[in-house]
Length: 255
Image 1 (cartoon, helix red, strand yellow):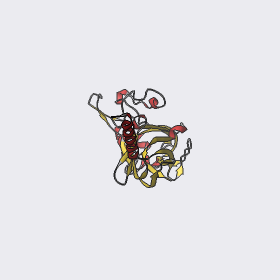
Image 2: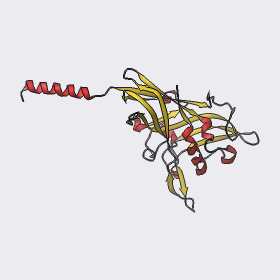
Image 3: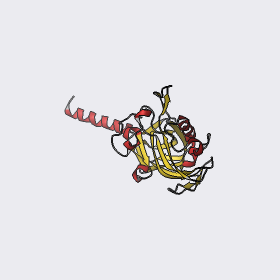
Image 4: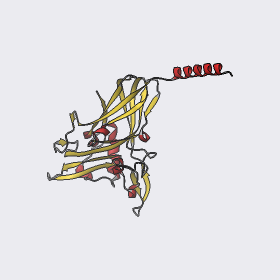
């Protein structure tokens, strides 16, 4: 092939490739926290859960992973930076926003789904060697990997005394009669939320606002009572399963 023909063929090929490329945009997921309809206030013992426990919140930290946006035609696209995992910490403002980068095809989307925590494919010790993520390490004696969530605070017990609580959700454990770990139980779960009038534009960043209502951890379908389960639940699989069962209704998409 002559040089002129080769140049013409190359130009034609580039034109075809360019015409096949779909326009893409950026989605920025923003995380916020509330108790019911009110923004969460920290270190204020004024909230009451479904069991009647009065409580306050000091820390909120968690992982989300495998975030997918779904179009009306059924096609799905993943926000895939950093192993497809994002760490959220109320004390780290930059962690409250997660950008997809320019990777989401332009168009209208009607659903977002994500794994709360880390499924077993991602929940591997040493996946995150540096802070702040490595501060979420889950004890090796309980199966290793990472916490899915830490919510720390205080509640008033039946005597009106403040007691610390640590709602730490992670992989569960099955123990044999000697107390030896024999089974690691994946307590992560999928959250699926509808989207309304959500259009990814090529010209601007599209914001996806995800809110966590902390009171929902304590109700629907099960009622979590601090006076029953206490303040530390890492080795209490019944409490872990209860939180997992309530997690489906914790998040919502807000304007």
